[in-house]
Length: 416
Ligand code: GLV
Ligand code: MN
Ligand code: MN
Image 1 (cartoon, protein in one colour):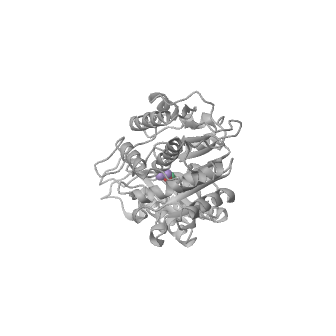
Image 2 (cartoon, rainbow, N blue to C red):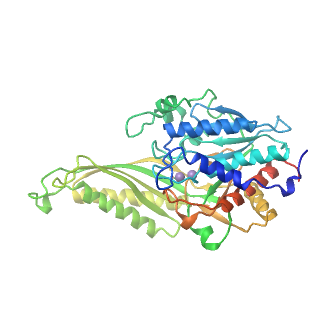
């Protein structure tokens, strides 16, 4: 017996239970999650996800980068599946919603369709993309980058973490280097639900954001070489202080982002002093930096201006500064038909919505380069993310999952 699809809703309690249940894999005392990509905790959540998808009648396969695909058949298996999902890895001090909501909601869509006895026209494929976060291995969105051939698979497999462990070795260690050829799995389109990770929806009291654009991103790796010497006996004018040079770079990045605002951001997220000691002038520092903006021309301008300022800082302070661009992702423009399906689904459910730009990076940015793609945002508390305090309410998650469900029915063909 199949229920009418038009007033179908997901099981909000079941969705919430999936989120809470998986949060124990890498759960922290403060209520967050530490589940670095391809870690033991990542293996545990992947095993959970595989078992849950198989119990829901899906066939699960894994590609050579550990990307996971759970296929729910459709009526017409000559049609390409609609991909839905996100990522299950987290930041070192991450929350339990970033990425996880999108995967759990995709699973919940499958479970809801099963309960209602609805077979969609096209198959549906629930995805868990490897290393969206880019914290253990750079860059972010690595599994989906390999999938769309934005980076060669061999290059990705060779990337190493701070301990020198490669992506390939980490995949083998947790048993998730799968047999499927990377990129062989094809989709008709892709939809991803995610928390906003910013303050707009909450401030405006809106339950749904229809993501129309994603920011372009540049990531840098930097190294400053000055000279280690005695803090007490080295006169100020003779110092080659790497940390003082870094301080100027931090402020240059901040200043440039502000000057190109309001839609540009810039940060230094990591800085490591080699051989730190309170009475040694820092001689060597490694750091990372980034800019993000939805405007490609502004991204160019920020990059150019930073390179110029860094040269000037190096010359004035008599230190060597290497600034390598290790990743550049152009701004994303999502597919109007897919954003339209999301807006129509929200309208059908009586959920007010607004167009929005994604500040964070998402696997959907890569998917959008090969198939029609769009994203749904729901609010999160105080816009806080990449923090153990990250929080969203059960009803906010459920609203997003219901929009995903109805967008899936519209795009994959599930009957009105
Ligand atoms: C990942 O979450 C990113 O936006 O860098
Ligand atoms: Mn995410
Ligand atoms: Mn994230």
